[in-house]
Length: 431
Ligand SMILES: *Cc1c(COP(=O)(O)O)cnc(C)c1O
Image (cartoon, rainbow, N blue to C red; front, side, top):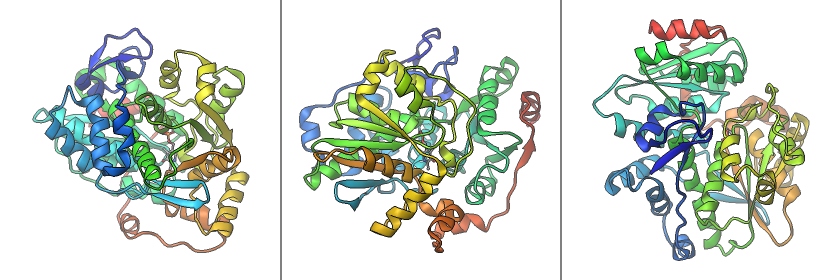
C-alpha cells in the first residue's frame, strides 16, 4: 500500500516509511491510497465470526500486501488480547466498552498494534525513539504498549498538573525504556514540541525519531477493528439496521478510523462526534469554517484539544467538502456541568456508570437518536480512571480494578522541562 500526505507536497511513502516517520515531510498526515471495500458476504456473516477473525480481514485490506498473512494475524491476535463487548445501557442504546486493555482505555488497541508493527519493521536495527504527547490516556497506552520492547525508547510528554494522578502513574512509574517528561504548559504545547522535533534537522541526524500519536497510520487505523466488532455484535442480536455510532472525540483519530470502516462498507448509517467544551469541530459543522484555538481544561481531559490533528484526514476523506461531511457526521458539545449531570442521571436511572468522556457520547446519542435507529457510543475509558471526578459527581465511592491499583503503588519518575523547544531539544541531544 502506498500512503500520500494530506498536504500533497511530500513524496508518497510505503507502509514502513509511513509508520516509522509518522508525519510526512510537508507536515501532512499519511493517508492510504486505496480503501478496499469488503464483500457483501463478509458483512452478512460478520456475526458468525470472532473479534480476531473479523479484524484480520480488515487488517489484510490495508496491510496484506506489506506483511505476510501469518505475521499479520499474529500482530492482530496479540493486539486484541482483550474483548470490546457491547452493553445495553437502556433500550436501543449500547455502550461499546473499550476499557478492558492494560490501561483501561481504547488507546491500548492502537498502541499495541503500533508497537508490534514498529518492532516488525525495525527488527535488529534498534535505537528507535518514540515521541508522544499526551493529555492523559495516550501516554499510558503507548508506554504500556511499548514497555520492554527492545531497541525502542519512548518519551512521553505531558502537561504538568493537567492529568489525573491515576493517569500520571501509568506512565511515570514504569522505568525501563519509558521516560516521562513533565512539561510546564498545556497539551497543545506538548504536541507542538513533538511536531517541532520531527522537523528539526540536527535532531533527526542524531537520532531516529518516530511518533506514536494518533497521527500514525498504524495507531489510528487498527481502531476500526472494534467498530466492525460492535456491528457484528449488534447483528448477532438482530439490531443491525439503522445503526448510529457516536464517538467522544478529541484529536478525532478514533472517529476517523470508524469513517474508514464505513468506506470499507461497514453499514453504519451515520455518526455523531461528541465534544466537551472544546467545540472546534462542532462549530465547523455549523459554519463550514475550521477555526482552531487553544484548548480549554475540562473534566473529560483526554478530549481537551483545540486543534484536532486528524481533522485534516476527515477533510481529505470527504474531498474538502463540508456538506459531504455533514451528511455523515453531526456534532454535539457539552459543558462540564452537563457532563456531570449526565453521569449522575444515567447512574441513577440505569445503574450504568459512565466516565466523563463516555458521558459526552451517551448524551449526544440519547439526544440525537431517532425512534427507528439503534445506537452505540464508545465508552472510551473505565470510570475508575477518573475516580475523584466520578466519585464527586455520584457522591459514592467507586472501586479501582486490580491492575489499575497496581500502578499506583509504583514510584513517580519524571523529568521536568519548560515548554521552550530549545530545552526539549537539549534534553534529547544529551540523552
Ligand atoms: C483519547 C481519548 C478520547 C479522544 O479520542 P480521539 O481519538 O483523540 O478523538 C476520548 N476518550 C478517552 C478516554 C480518551 O483517552
